[in-house]
Length: 408
Ligand SMILES: O=C(O)CCC(=O)C(=O)O
Ligand SMILES: [Fe+2]
Image (tube, rainbow, N blue to C red; front, side):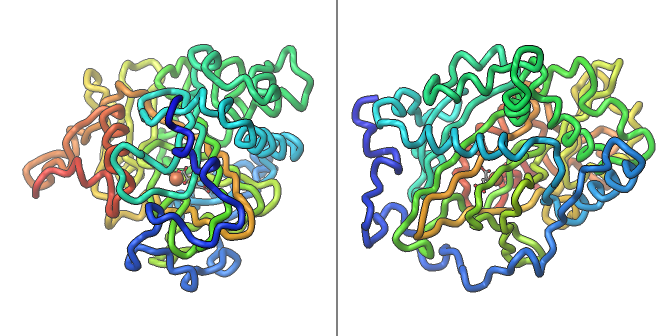
């Protein structure tokens, strides 16, 4: 891509540079107040041990997940079944990709958020006035067959690790692919996590029926790798400012540099890396498919629990792919604000996997919850529309969801 050379942060960074380029400098009021961050060991971001998930301890594990979804929306899991070498390999491949010669990387460069495979920088360079200190590679990966051919073929391990299938791959490589969304079995190990998150969260009687059920063709997954180079003055900029993920559930792998923070009880809490753990982050939507019915219910996470209390499933409108969403500000199920800071010593890499509804999925308030006393709080939208707004909103303060709010 001609002329894009300096658009990638990794190509702009000059080692030993002593000042931050002005387009990255935030106004003072918007700078991260690093002295006011609480350490996760004090704030207790839940760490859930999945070791017993398929055994006698299953009930307790599911309960713990449900509890974490209610109280935190952001937690860590250990004993997730993905070998350490595999997890390390994912970070390594990301690092290798970002170290490729500029020309090789720029083959994937695009500033178009609609592109399913792209390398870019900041957040949405088409609209933002202040840039974020990160480069990212974003890949769609479900169904795998639709997207794998677009993925980078370099570094060589990038392709092979992701296309190995269970039936043909050496054990470690097939496990490696398990962290990626996709067909051919690559979603399964995460499927357990994903279903348990949903099941634990929506655990009213009957609520778990069909969650991510068979024949579920509506989900999609995107996979990101982001590089946050070392920065001269980390107190003036962000890798990513405070935001809530627009999708259903995010599974995040971070390296050993503690720069991820989550807002808890009004305070930013550092999510200090714990070896061999993954982070689960509840996003703005969750998919709920009812087996044997056409309908798909996308619950807006903050109200998912209440929704299941209030709306018997069978009252949902079967024609409209019916969805529930409500005000997030005062609801304990809110998807949570989190942010990534940068540091001055060395680059940081993180690998998030985003599980999303399909772009066509219609999301709106359940009819049974809408009456004169409780008018719809938000207008209906497709996930595609929401997602486009999310990119155009540019991680501005407030919530992207507010753009869909109907006047009171
Ligand atoms: O880099 C991180 O740790 C957080 C990434 C993130 O929040 C995102 O990509 O949505
Ligand atoms: Fe995020």
